[in-house]
Length: 66
Image: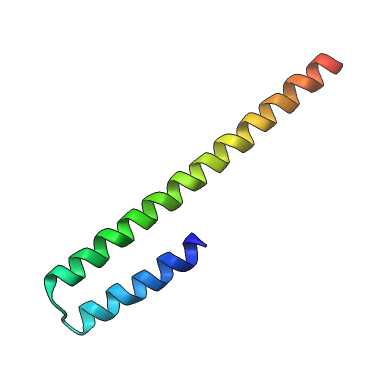
């Protein structure tokens, strides 16, 4: 799941920072983490849109059936 991947990568990034690893490694991990977070929000937004469309269709069907 995306949540798990985000948590693991965040921990890896934090560990790299604490261990004062090379800037390029830290930067690479940071970019990867940003991409996963963006993917998570795109996924969540898509789900919310889908739910909203279904609710709108159900409302329309209830009006037509009334």
